[in-house]
Amino acid sequence: MEAPPQKNIKQNIFLFIIGFIGVLSSLPLIPKLLALQPETPPLPIYVLQLLSVVQSSALLFGMVLLGSFFAPQVKLTAPTILAIAKSETALDKIKSQIYPAIIGGVLGGLFLLVFFDFFSNYLPPEFLASAAKFSPPWYTRVLYGGITEEILVRWGLMSFFVWCSYRVTQAKNSEIRSYNYILAISLSALVFGIGHLPVAFSLSPVVTIPLLTYIIMGNAAFGFIAGYLFWKHGLECAIGSHIIAHLTMLIAEVIVS
Image (cartoon, rainbow, N blue to C red; front, top):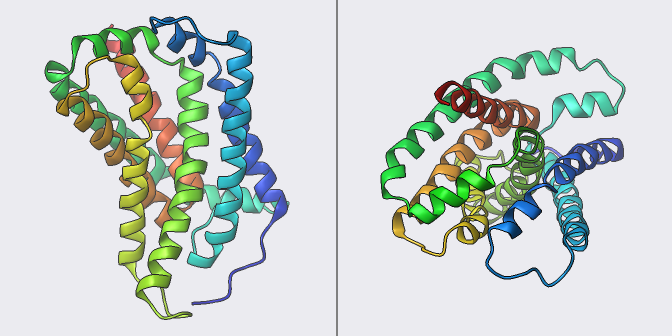
């Protein structure tokens, strides 16, 4: 295993900025979520929004740093963003990421649509009704879902998981084997799925096995796609596929309605 390249501060700043834009895009969700709760919130909505931004920004900052430390050590990259940070030409980098992102995004979006269609008859009616009212705006799906979540889960967690698996199962400075990436992809995808449970629980007073399966496995399945694309093509490819998956589902919703 080669020595990790020197970390790039500009790359970290760029990642934090685009992730922070996603954090800000999620602010409209808080009033929607509170409106579905029977209790009156203990604090004014603007205070809760401010606290949410502070908490999410701190988590984002931590994951950007975590990824910046561990990703280079396990040969995970953000080649386009790094090229931009270094004021280099990024066109060649992004060209190789476009087609995998489109394929992964469209297939992932279609899978999630089919997955929901299959589970919809088994999900609690309260969850379905609340989810329809809570539906995030398109820009939140694209910016927070597509960008911020990928920085948090893939850049931060997955890079760390690969490094942990490598250091536990292989000798130092040996070539990283594929199973380390596959294990890290699976673990980070599972965390990604579990991370959606708090919102799901707030939308439904009834928690059922089909609901847990739908939330965890549906999101984890796409997380596996995004993780694979991060491994093989870079972080921007995972971000692009996540954005395209949301756009695919949005287009399908418009067509159906």
